[in-house]
Image (cartoon, rainbow, N blue to C red):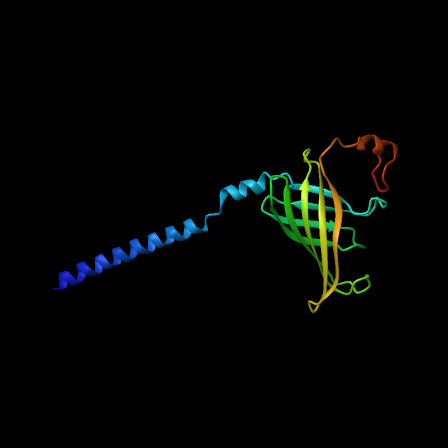
Length: 184
């Protein structure tokens, strides 16, 4: 009788081990990301760094945005504008994408009361891959979540930031040394 109990115990433990191993395999398989969707994002022409021309009449009013291959988005504007926006993007076609960016405004001296500004944009990258146009909607909310401002239909343009040849800084430094530069 004792042998039977020990044998059954061993069998039960082995079966539990098999069931636990199979359960983990299914969970890992379900957690595997869709690689085709990840590849579509990684190769989308919007991925990269862009310069926004916010106001063509003011060359100093620009901002920069980074579209990452994982679907995240970061935008930095001049401090007197709205600051830093965090967001996400998703492809909607071979050269199109939808973007959401949220800016947090906690400066009561600005035009709008403190809260958040949420921009929704539909973007289209041109055939060259160096420019895109976005149609944007904005919704501002105060700190309680109440909508304080809405606007629709802005059209913005952006140009890809590329690495190019750098100027000859050595020639400049030789002719105009910076203050505090040690003498040769």
